[in-house]
Image (cartoon, rainbow, N blue to C red; front, side, top):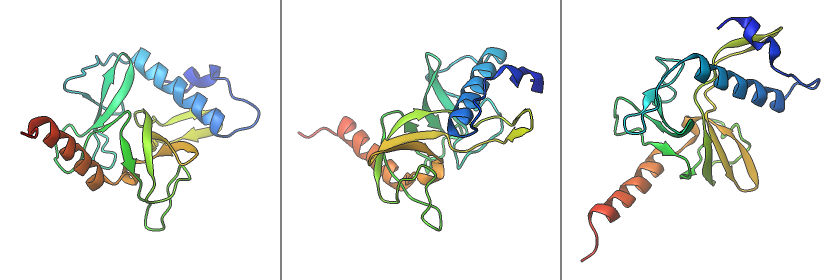
Length: 171
């Protein structure tokens, strides 16, 4: 992709989250149109940005053009799949910070997933690859978080409990 592809992206006079969301959506749309990567709901596929490992996640499962799950293509049992609709427990960084404004210990629903953003230049603005690829909703807030903000041990426990119910029904 060349930088002139992004000249047509409408940017409002007040730079901010809306402009970033417009840019992200346009970049994702163009990546999908310019790069043929067939969806594979069974096996998943690597991120469009290839060779990226975002806190253990290396790919996505796409269904009807929508990212429905983040996965570890190396099948590392320590990295649970994050799916749309999952209820996840949040944890902050060493200072308790979570980018969406939520607090550590809150449970929120995964409402959207995306791939890491590509590095792009629009005029004098440079957007680097982003690892905020999980949109969550809960506690009166909606925002994007990193996979590192999800308590993976708690999520694994939830998924193991569901598996145990499915494969070990009560007598």
